[in-house]
Image (cartoon, rainbow, N blue to C red; front, side, top):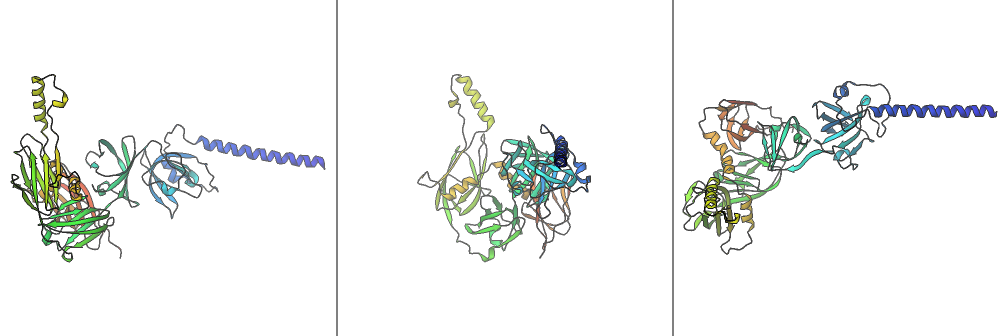
Amino acid sequence: MDCKRTKGINNSILNILIAVFMFLAGAATISGCSINNGAVNDQSDAYADTASNTEYQSTVGIYDSEDTALVVKKDYEACTIQFQNIGTSRRYTLNFDGVTQAYDKYDQAVSLQQIEEGSIVTARFYKPKKLLTYVKVYDDCLNLNEISGYGIDLKKGTLTVGDGVYNISGHVVVTSDGKEVDLMDVNPMDVLSVWGYKNMIYAINIKHGHGYLRLLNNTYFTGGWLEVGDRVISKITEDMLVVVPEGTFNVTASNKGSSVTQQITFPRNEELAWNLGEVEITVVQKGVIIFTVSPANAKVTIDGKQIDISKPVELEYGLHQMRITAEGYDSLGQYIKIAEPSANIDVELEKAQEEEKQEESSETLENSDSSDENSGSTKKKTQYNKPDDSEEASSENSSKEDKKETESESSERESSTSVVSSSSKYKVHIDAPSGVEAYLDGNYLGITPLEFDKVPGNYVVTLRKTGCQTRSYTIQLDEEKKDVNYSFAQLTEISE
């Protein structure tokens, strides 16, 4: 009996040892498929083709492939995530379950909901089941979060943020509200988050998008100004359709000293109508402005008309476009908002660079020992104060300062009008979709198909049709001497 018992025990121990050996061998095999030294293992072809009938229970940390990819789309109902390989741009979809591990770039555990679409990640998965077991935001991932005031050059394929210039991948993934869109869908007023590696951008997510505002019964305000917070300043025209930022803003329409303001919430990609025939308009008011301009011979125009600044100038309440020019100085173009009975506007123009260089060279020859502080350089200064010269600027003055812009920026705002009215030899054709209203920077063009004059610059083309979702595209017209044709996607019908 003892011998039999001993033999049974020995067999049990042997079976346990065999099981342990097989487990370790399997783990070693799996570990051997992992990627060392951060190298990218592109096995995209195998992702979709590999299949297995072997039953597999997900185990924490078990994987046979690793990839560096960006997150394209997450589907929580289907429990899947779509990835795009950074090196090859090939796409594949993996399943996830309750034991899929997720980490941020600091190795802190997070939920899959916290891994944003567009993030560049390290993904580990088990190919036979296409099962994602581990995902971590890439350590060296470039992430610029919630940026505005950027510039996108569609021709060069670059994104400019402040002093930084980044290249945009030819396979960049652009998403908005969980849906993939085109780079042309990005509007200059959208707030973006971008992801990339070193100097290359691979993903753009529209964090805060845009909607549309149509003005109804706006005859009284035609020729005046429309303001949406401090984000939009636009000349009011007939049948206009303005692209506006997503969110809640104070919207003001003003003309001839009268104005109306209303707080409006703009949903993303939706069109709202503001009936100006139903609002109460304030009485016409005027303010007296005293201008102090240096140099004294500078010319000042308000709304395109030259004014005499040797005496107080009476201007209607509201927004006005001011431009100051003088020979040998940089011109200044900006918006001013009149909202007080009286105010001062002080402007000191900056000398043109060539003039400064000549002056500095002359001073250097005459007095080589003079310090940099006596170089005679002049800085451009603009002040807009109450007559009592109080150091506290009113909120109206502050908003005016926020709206200050250079002459070139002012010209860009007027460019869409010149496109419609110029007689350029070359044309821009919008061929599709057919039978929809087309707007250029908010100004009505007509019903497609149509054409308009080609003038170099960046523009926003908006397409609208009753019963369909309004859509806009950013286009960039070059200086090539040839026509340009655009065919955009059909508008999506709005489900009732």
